[in-house]
Length: 549
Image (cartoon, rainbow, N blue to C red; front, side, top):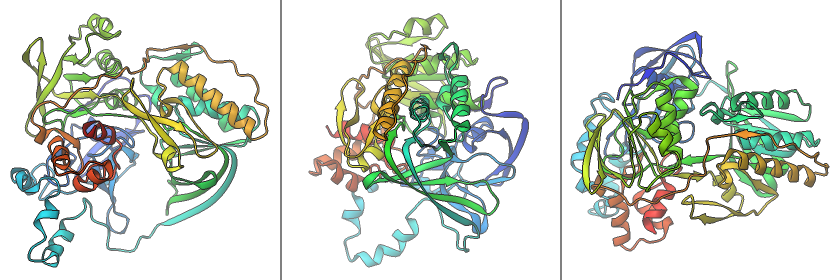
């Protein structure tokens, strides 16, 4: 893997504003609009951290909240903050970042010896090992070994603000669904607040060639943002993350502030109606050595190219169980990358011919068995045509389907149902005055997303006492396809097929837990620490549940 900066594109970077930053004491260059992750990728940094238990090398796997590997310490001294996903850090002049959980360096970590001693550290080893002669004997060592980062010892000098806000309609998420729902409710006259964790609204529309009302989808998002910003009855909170959804539509959210001395603002929000448009998380694919640096989510690779002109490598191989992987591969080919192929377990995809027309080899009825490489991926072995084939590549971009972001919905008391066609859980019955729409509700076709979001915004406004005006639905030209999902069994050695990358939980660990009679997901999670990392199982939860089933 050798990441680099493309000479063209990058919708969210300003090449006229170069920035310098340091990572592990070495100075690099990026641009305004970069995240730390995209800047590291563009500078060819492959290894950004080490896994918790085995200290295996880890590279960037996702974007935004879909990141379990690239945890870094930001700042120095009293302002040092550990365990921050590099994908959530906006690049600023003079930013100082350090890798974690590695000694003496992230590229040469003596803790890697744990990987050689793996049989001693199987799931639940701590319950069996530290019992004799007594727990207290081991406690000091365990305390020193616990955690990834180190908290600063000096008092925090920054200021933290708090505010309260009541509104008619609270919209969480400002992708295409959130924007459409907010526009519809605001046009009806409701008091609308929009929460968006990203610095950009409609950021997901930067990738792809979708068109809405004859214009680029990203331009439609910019126009929607401008209209909401100009309205007296709408407020947009950027870089604001909803942390909790409690009784009577009460939310806690944290806003990242760039004002000197003021780091964060805590929002306490009470809404009459809530629209959840939180999107979805792409799932990894389970195969041997699927944790090597250079293996990342296909949607993340597409997004880095579109938003930051940052490519993780020059010769990617795409592994997908649904059509969204084809879209990412086509985008990479159109950006000038030498796509080595698309591996798909299904007999054929509607997008296969388009891929072949761009000289992308398509391997249908095939699966990846093993990734090869040491510090970084260098090839993949696939099962194809009754035999085996090795394909050289410097990136494996994987898409194992999409899991709607239902975390806030379930916290509110809502119940879920399993949608077989996407292989994931979707909202079923709301417990509060709430509606989910877009990918958060299991809808992925752009026209369907906008229609469902408009309906959610209209009903939310009506329930606030406003007569929603009839909305003209925008005309949509899209390549988005509902990701018909094909479940694939884990391939290769289960001891190195990772379900949870941060906490080093493998397929073998999950199987051991079941053999030892831990069957309920809650018990397996506690026994293996599956989903107990800082990402709280966003990438691993559904894969783990499928394994248990």
